[in-house]
Image 1: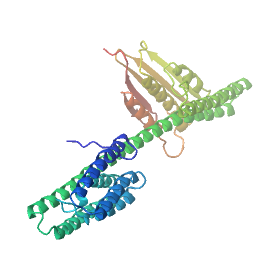
Image 2: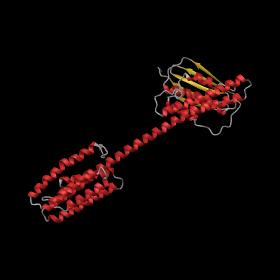
Image 3: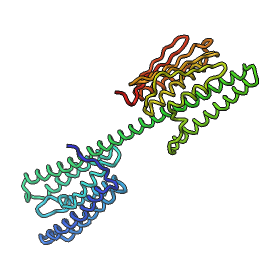
Image 4: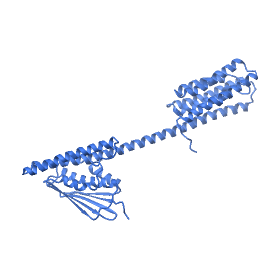
Amino acid sequence: MRIATFDPKGTRQWRLLVLLSAVVLAPTTALLMVAMNAAGSSPLDLAVIGAAALVLHCAVFLTARSAVAAFAVASTAMLVLAFVPVPGWSSGILLPSALCFLLVLWRVVFDAPTPWPWIALAVALAGIAVAEAIGASRADGELPPWMQTFEATLLIAVATVTWGVAWTARMQNERAAADAQAALDRARRTERAHIRRDLHDVIAHSITLMVAQAEAARVGTGEAHTDESLAQLAESGRSALRGLRGMLRVLDASPPGASDVVPGIDALDDLVAGATTPLHHVSLTENGTRRPLAADTEVALVRLVQEGITNAFRHLEAPVSVEVTVDWHLDHVTVQVSDDGGRGPLRTGPPGTGLTGISERVAAAGGSFDITTGPSWTLTARFPVLDSP
């Protein structure tokens, strides 16, 4: 059996319990006081019972402010009731309004910080022992021993069960909160990984092309060639800015429209053309008929090509040639990005995280990824198509 969990503070369930305690328990206690008066109880005893019952009902409302303070007030009221004789009972702690103490006990166990729940349990059990001792000393044989034993056992059982149910609800509530926080942390880590990959793919590629085009302009032999390289350099800078602005729009939760951040398969031609300089040759070969791809597959495919070109330009000494081959099949598409090794590797510092990000993208799109290293590098990926038989 699963115990339903709810936070009593400010909820409809708790307000209903408070209302019931006032509407049902208070009138019932008042009727019993009328009966006690008829049975000969003193006006002082009736006044004490009425005041203690009122304090108990007020303590229930006080839990909305401070569960610990409410428990202290309710415990004091119960101690007062323990000293008041009630005809046929050992003490006033069996009056209907005394059930308000259970509501306060529930709240302090559920809501108060540790160690207050354990203190509340100890106080409740100690209070029952004191009340029963007072009642036994005052009974003078009016109540049989078995009745006193039954009464004590019943009170201990009710207090313990109330505490246990409240503690179970507290643990379930804390576990649910911990699970929600863990899910939020996972979502944040995933989003950060997505942002990191997009930043790397957009900015690193554009900056690498700008460096390559600047090198081509520096070694150019003619004014027309220099103008062309500088124009490409400026366009790469503008492309980087467009990509960055697009990502910022996504982070700002603006309506999607940043095509620079989510490129499609049609971006391959512009990607290859924009990467070509006199010192860096990039070619694209497509074999077969294009098949429809999922959106995340198109992004992963384009980013794979982008990363292959970026790595070749960044890590190899120019001149460098990169060949991009896309082979379309009925149930999949294979993409291969190969470089010729250039004039040898450059010392560019420690490796980055671009290939790790590409591997994650490919896996998320349901594809496979492989790297062949040596003097030249080859990146190969296989992606499923949408209309696979």
